[in-house]
Image 1 (cartoon, each protein chain N blue to C red):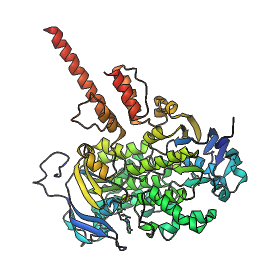
Image 2 (image 1 turned 45 degrees about the horizontal axis):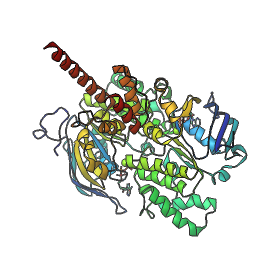
Image 3 (image 1 turned 60 degrees about the vertical axis):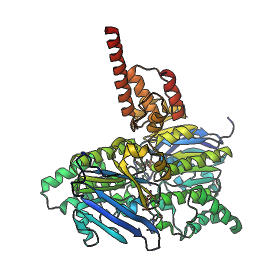
Image 4 (image 1 turned 45 degrees about the vertical axis):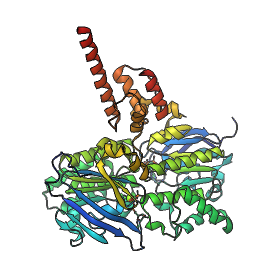
Length: 282
Length: 298
Ligand SMILES: Nc1ncnc2c1ncn2[C@@H]1O[C@H](COP(=O)(O)OP(=O)(O)OP(=O)(O)O)[C@@H](O)[C@H]1O
Ligand SMILES: Nc1ncnc2c1ncn2[C@@H]1O[C@H](COP(=O)(O)OP(=O)(O)OP(=O)(O)O)[C@@H](O)[C@H]1O
Ligand SMILES: [Mg+2]
Ligand SMILES: [Mg+2]
């Protein structure tokens, strides 16, 4: 197999104060230009896995790790987190933990400063990043005088301004309004067009089904399912066993089949679901 | 559009329990977060507040328990003017689960946190135990009782805050984005909690971006946009207003978009849940079968 954007092989990880590993023998890979969605119940290990991919775990957050992680062919273990941050952008699950600076402009400049982006270039990038998250005009405001969703938008903008080639986002849309959620997924899709790679963790599966190429289902620290979006979301009984759900349209088609003895294919997006249902009910 | 009680009784003849009169709020930095809001909330109502990021939802509800006071206008809760009452008095009437659980203060263990609210209410030991145990059971907190809430992640901390409000059960419960970061099971639990409060006659005010939750509840829905209230109606009616939805950056649940695109559903209705479409199909099939039987019988 040719070099993949992200290759995880036999990854096992244990925090110092836990008795059992929180990640168990995880292997998967994603190619350049692909977007991977990670889903799973609370405590499954999604955030821990994401932080292993950029080296934050175990280099900054300690624990015992086994296995191999390669990002763009580089061994994450052998590179330090600062060096990785040139390639891998990371949006944290709790945006407030990411925010620290005095004004929104400074907040965004901070990450770029660490990468050595020249000052002249910063202003343009700040403007760009703020417009991508619809926060134009907020440059001088304090990050603390923002609403919850605005803070989350800012955390995303700060990472976008660093222009990473690999983007990892841990529940980046949890506090966003529906339009904002779509915009974040659109940003990922745009990056994809440039051959960039993304990982997104989310509890809402409808957008994952519409935007991602592959889905990894994690539970109890183990990979329960890994495949294309279609493959994963049509195995609806397996998802239910894991207390998870498929997109609403898929749930509908599945229940329709059960209640009315139908044989409809399980589509995972609105457009396909409408086609499937209409062609059977003319 | 006029306010309706959930049980359909004439709202006009009833006194609202909470009343927001011409309220604006300007933050110290000069940002106007809430502008000219009028809103009456009646006994037993579940009211959702939707709207885009920064539209003023959190700022508005922080007025209900006196965390903020209006810079213009007045708010009364249970007959009390929030400007004149102590926060401690108001918070015995209005329980609030913060959007950001880092802003909520907690006692050093989950058990202490759950018991604390009840000890303020002068109830018997046995009643307190019963209430706390019910909350522990619903939120599956058995293994976390001795944990410090500070060590939990934010969605877990939010659950602890909800459990402790459930134990206290104040008249009004304000939930600011209760399903944020929750998995499927957690979202279902929030839905159950809201329904339980409603059954027991509480007022629930709920801010959310979770359209599935609103679809399931189909409750009275306020839409905020740029600090103002732009709609106040039942969720299915709000969701059918394309202009309002667009203006406020809203999107109905996926199943509603699906139903809207189907050609053979009853187009005068807005379907908010998977079950509502399935029931319609079932009824329709039964009607057709009846028609066939009548047809063949004659
Ligand atoms: N720093 C830490 N030290 C010890 N245990 C931890 C630490 N961080 C997480 N854990 C534990 O590891 C497990 C996996 O946690 P993780 O945060 O990766 O889950 P998650 O799938 O991201 O959950 P959520 O959906 O709630 O964000 C959980 O049991 C959690 O309690
Ligand atoms: N502490 C503060 N100081 C100054 N301005 C603030 C403060 N908190 C919020 N704001 C501003 O007030 C407006 C309303 O914010 P609010 O938090 O009420 O929005 P919201 O509707 O709850 O949004 P979200 O969906 O993102 O939580 C926004 O423009 C926000 O930037
Ligand atoms: Mg997580
Ligand atoms: Mg808010």
